[in-house]
Length: 175
Image 1 (spheres, rainbow, N blue to C red):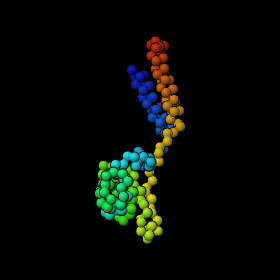
Image 2: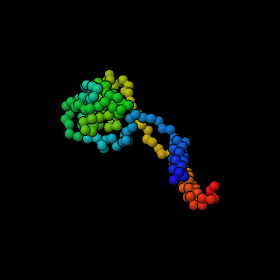
Image 3: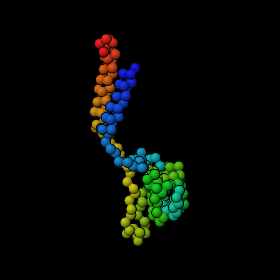
Image 4: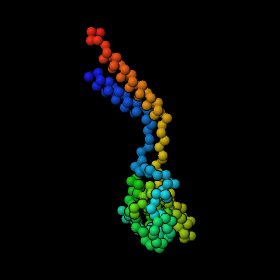
């Protein structure tokens, strides 16, 4: 029984060490969107173009210029829930700026789909626009994982085989 526990412990230590040694370091992102930018419009319940009239800590109001998807009236004011902190997938809207905004369940954010648009007035159109925060890069699986898994499997088989062989020996030979 002690041999089995020792074998399992050794196997666990080898596995953890192998994962730590082989796993590549990935950048940490507080906000990681599951959708690609080309999927945001399909998932959205409402898509509008409008100018921000008010920003609070928990929401934004837009004067709606046009509706691309959903049932909402042009010329109306739309209130959406959103956090201002982009690290938590919110968005820092600016009063007076035009946006194309996607919404799901009366909320919006970085992962829902927000694009600043040029203002229609000539003075504002000459000013440069700030870009939206970049989305987290899509993770690509490392080529080392299959090799790490195969190595771990071989080590596990070796530990099990050694444990079985040692258990089959008569007591007078192990001395």
